[in-house]
Length: 265
Length: 288
Image (cartoon, rainbow over all chains, first blue to last red; front, top):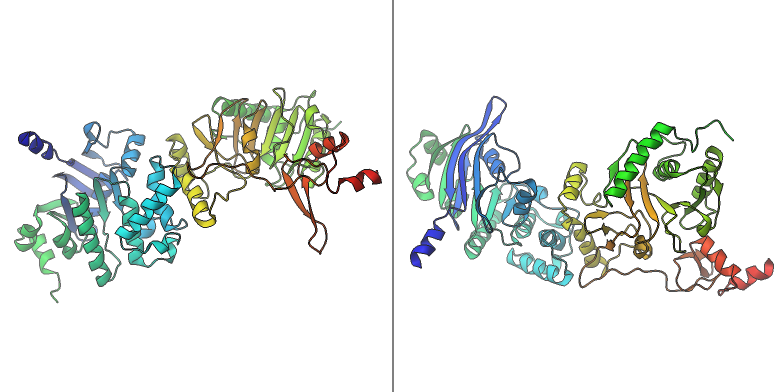
C-alpha cells in the first residue's frame, strides 16, 4: 500500500522533453528538459530575452513549439502529450486543470465584466448553471484573495493594480487547477504589495497543494516560492537545481553574475 | 414591370444565396458566410433580409413585410414597394395569406404554417460579439461549443439588475448545438421560435446567413435558479383587448396618459374585425 502510494506520487505531473521553439533562425528556447512533481513549484529566472516567457507559453500551449514534448498527467487518461492533443481537449485542460496568470492583470481579466463574473466564468465554462452557487463561490474566492465581497459587482477597472492581480489569481484558481503557469506575477507592483501577493500565493500554493511554474526575473520571488530553479540564458537552460543551492552556490558564470547583481539593502 | 431581373438580384447571386440558405438549414443555428451584395438601401435597413427574400421569392409568392410587427412603418413600406417594383409579386398585410414574410424585430402573433417562410433582418448575427470582439475566437468558440461566456452575460444581468434584464436578442441554443442570436426580437417571441414555418436569418453588413428548420428545438439560455421568462407589458391591448399579444406603449399627451397597443397591426386589426374591443377601441369603431 505504502509502496503503491509512493509510486503514484513519483509520477511527474508535467514532463518536458527537448522543448524547442525557434523564431526563424533565432532561438526562442532550445532543448529544455525537466520534470515537475505534484505539489512542486519550479522557478524560471533569467534576463530579458533569455526565452523564459517563450518557454512558458510553449508549455501552456499558447504557441506551438517546433520540437519536443509536454507530457501532462491527466486525471482520466494518465500522462498525455499536450502538444499532440486535440484542440478541444487542450482548451478544456486550459480551463480546468491548468491556470495561467499573466503579468498584466488586464491580459487575464475581462475588464468589462464584474469581479464576480470574472471569477464565475470558469465555473460557467465547465457547466455551472446555478446563479446562487456561482455567486457564493465567487464571494468565497474574493475573500480568499483578500478582496472585500462588497466589491463583487465592481468592474476590475475600478480596482488597484494589486487587487486586479489578486482577482486574476482568484479567477484562475476557482476550478481547483493542479498546475498554474505564472508569468511575472509580481511585475509592475510596488514592493509592499508584492510582499503581500507573495505571501498570499505561498499560502494558496501550500493549502491547495498546487504545482506551479513561475517565470520571473526577481530572485526574491523564487527564493520565497520556488522549490527548484532553472536559470536561462540565450534560450538555453544553463543551470538548474534546488533553489537555495543555485542561489547560494551558483556554478555557472551567468548565474554568479545574476546573483551578485541583486542590490543588498 | 421593370428592367430589373426578377427580385432585383441577378440569378448567379441568388444561386449563391440559396446555397448558403440550404447549408444554414442543414446545420441549424450555424452562421454561413455569404458574399453579401450592395443593395439600394443603407446597411441597417434590412439588406440581409432583402437578399434572403429575393433569393427565396418566386413569382407566385405573396409577400408581407413587417417592421416591429407593423405593416405601415417606413422600413416595411419601402421594402414592400421595392419587391412590388422589382419582382412584381403580390403583397399582403394579412399574415395568414402571405407565403414569405420578411420581418424586423418581431414574430407575427398568428401561428405560422408549414408553407410559410419567415425572413429575419439581422443587425449583428454573432451572439458572443459584445463579450468577445475577435471573430477568429468566436468562430473557435462555436466550433468547440465553448459557450460559458454567454452565461457570463446573463450572470452580469442578474448581478446588476436582480434578474435577467436582457429583453430582446435573447440568446438561444438551437438543437442542443449552436448558440444563436434570434435577431432583436423581444424575448416574448422566443418560445415561438419552435414553429412550423422555415425561419431564415440574413445579416447583410456582417455577411452571414443562418436558419432554423421547421419544428427545430430552440431553447432560451438561463440559470437553474433564474429560469427564462417570456415577458410583456402587463396590460391588455387598448384597441382590441388582447391579453396575449406583445404590446407597444404609446404616449398620448403631456399629462401622462398612455396606451398599450398590439405591436402586430394585422393581429390587432383582425381581432377588432371580429368584434373584440379594448379600453380605447370603441371611439375608433364609432368614427368609422
